[in-house]
Length: 177
Image (cartoon, rainbow, N blue to C red; front, side, top):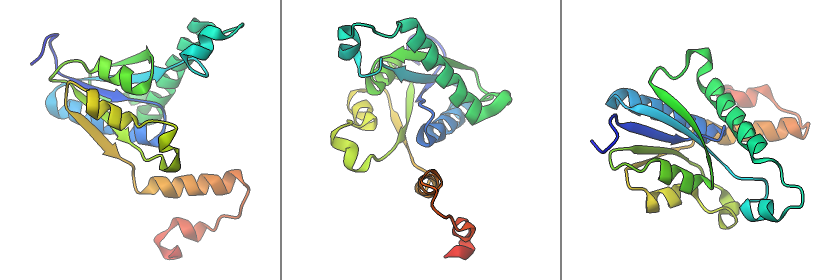
């Protein structure tokens, strides 16, 4: 075991469906290996660090950090409700890009870094993959949890609802095919 005592399962949390799946997988891994769970939400000022420094009226950092903490608590509540994850855990909000924040937090060789492995389609060039960054830079094993096959269906349904398009309930069951 590395320095610092108990093994750790470090998981990136954003509140997305992919990160919630990774959070549940990290809990299972923590339980299986008697590890502590570290749920990490990375945050940056709107527009990034450079825009924040150059802004005439930047948002107070304390407010941004509090908003990040509230997003982390909301994600944990969505994932586990009042019962909690059922393993020893800490929630951390870390200022920085997601990949860097996760790699710097999971800095022990016996840590396990768990991330949602989401595809971004055509947006990949604009938003570098957190998964690729973590795999390339982590000092510990990285477990990339794939999206649920239901996620694309949920996104499609959400799009129909938000655009007020008709939604056939038969499409939600096997009988609609």
